[in-house]
Amino acid sequence: MTGRARIGRTVAESTPAFPSRPRPPAGAPNVVVVVLDDLGFAQLGCYGSDLATPSIDRLAAGGLRFDRFHVTAMCSPTRACVLTGRNHHAVGMGFLPEVPIGFPGYSARIPRSAATMPRVLRDAGFSTFAVGKWHLTPRWETSASGPFDHWPLGLGFERFYGFLGGDTNQWTPDLVRDNGFVDPPRGPEDGYHLTEDLVDTAIRLVQDQQQATPGKPFFLQLATGAVHAPHQVPPEWVEPYRGRFDDGWEAWRARTFARQLEAGVVPPGTELTPAPPGCRPGTGSRPTSGVSTPG
Image 1 (spheres, helix red, strand yellow):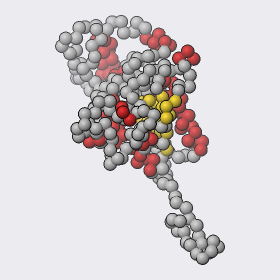
Image 2 (cartoon, rainbow, N blue to C red):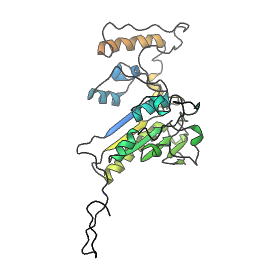
Image 3 (cartoon, rainbow, N blue to C red):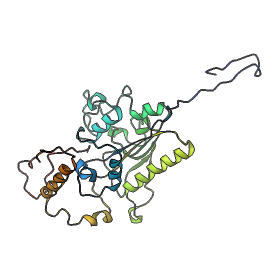
Image 4 (cartoon, helix red, strand yellow):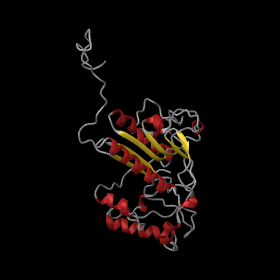
């Protein structure tokens, strides 16, 4: 027995006690982190885009928009920074886990000494869920036999649904639930698409948790497969934009930049940087200004 247990000569003379589970402080918030790969911040409506992102825009309208932030410009290193609060080299994720090179900072293994955010919150009494792209496990540890200590459940998450690698087919994905591989619930012929499945699963995990333990705070990381390659978009999302960008990348970029200036996303007097040397006008040259989320 632990705590205030008192053991006498008989049960009647003894006082039982049971171990207590950690409880988060009163008013502890729910935390939702949404990770969108390969998305420039100018592609969100609340940052000046003419693309329709109404849900994100509503969130931004009720919160804060930051215009100075940093990523490591690659998927796995940025994810490691977010989950540990440390420099990616300090936690072995200096590059992608598919190609570790065996030197300090590049082991592709987050060490146990670097407590992840879900592990800290779980140990403080939160529920912890990861849904979607993971990309923090060395490639030779992603088979059905593990080892599983660098899978989501080994790094602090209690539940996981998604895919372990850097990308997967959006119509027929390689899916994992917790520590085992599973088939998609439907096929593309039935209208299946990974993004919808991930969002529906994230909602269901939270609903189940809140129904069983009302008021218990949770940490949810939702990382879609989009807009990372492969670019497999349902037709109903493509058609509204057909012809919108026919005048070329540079023209779209200039219009977006003008909206950013008007909205105050970038300060007055900011000048749009020129396209890189060697890029032909109208060929879709990639932007050289702004901030991009991890790829």
